[in-house]
Length: 107
Image (tube, rainbow, N blue to C red):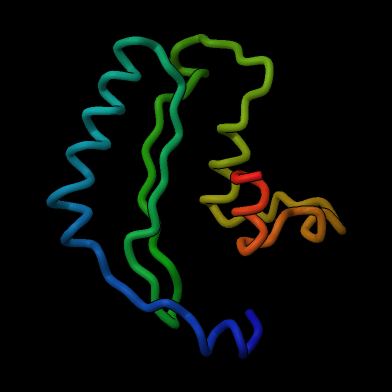
């Protein structure tokens, strides 16, 4: 991370908010997706500091349910969560910058 980005780092700890308000809702969603056999991957960053970011995640795996997806993104999501870089060389310049997102979604 560049020094400029590090200087503008958003610092927060939402562990308590996550535990109280969000985790129960995600658990209900996971339960429903499991009942209806809907593959799901969800992740949230609950804490961010100069030392790092802490993520929580849950999923309903298509593999466990014997669901075969034509385009299964869940393994790549898991790889990113586990710290693997899944970008191909030169691919990062293709991704839109956050400030461009309004143009993409509101044209």
